[in-house]
Length: 475
Image (cartoon, rainbow, N blue to C red; front, side, top):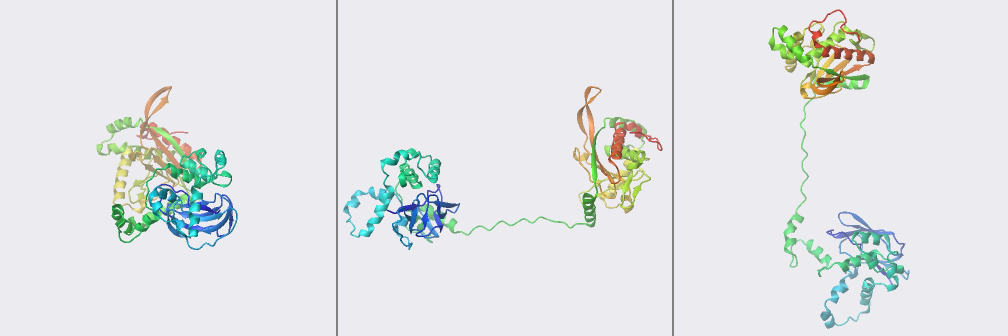
């Protein structure tokens, strides 16, 4: 007797399914676990597996069929290979759920008044339905725990159904997916409703009909309305690249590709700067420049100039043909402007006083913001200072901008606990990072330069009247 291949149980609130395609044809022999069809639910594609082996006798639902209700018969399978029927058009069996006999049994009075149909060909469908709803013999009920298809076990686990309470209808009492679906339907106490295909037909009518509910009539305009257009992409404002930006970008790209760099970091204790400010206030006659004269940027610029004078091997720049030795200790400092970054030069920083360096920095910074710097004020100097302490940056690694060979970065001043002579005390510390072009300056020379800067900053009183012409430190 042919066996019905049913539509698998779908998750709750799943839209009406569509049979996308058949992977088998009429007369084809299939085995247990073979994929026979693909079902589209609008959310995912479900593969229908065969739970029994046999030969496809008839296909009841053609491809691209919409609105299939649950447990609809998709095809007929002949396990005995007794014969094959042609596919043809779907019959009434396609839209008849498995619980149709159960609903008809609820109205015995109407059935008694009806006269039996004399047509013998109508008896085949009730026999198939009776076979689908009748439980198997008791001889296989005790073997259900060990005879179950993988899909049946998966459905039972999903819906928490005990397989010991399910009677198998497959070959040899094997529990298949339709047995689990029948047990699930038996556990659900649902009232009798109209068949699902009719509801689908009502939902797709262009105008509300008499059997359409108020809720369906209310949501119909939203279903018929066109999909909203995608949001417009917000345009990002842009600005043209200035010649200065293009030149600087070219230099930085060249530096990243061609210049081998080494980065050295050291912490400088700047507890002596307040004392330097008090002493300097008694020596300086111009109190307007007093705050800038003892700021970390000015003090480090002075210390870098003295260190370059003390270590001539670090006051050099690299060219492809020769190594240039600078005769004066010039120091450049970076002026950070939102649109660009320029580095004007402090000439002879080793010979200038703190007041003179502060005045030079103020003048060059003001003219940099108004774009009134001359080209000569931007050229020269083997080293540049970048001070980001005012922004709260603790430390950063600067890049070497050709043709310069040194870049010294200053972080923000912060208080840390340190150990001096076995005692823990708080100290004001500024993190310094020196980046050097190792083609021109060996790492040992760069380390000596950084140690000299640290010694000068931690003893700032020696910078008030430096002994020009003789080395200050020998590291």
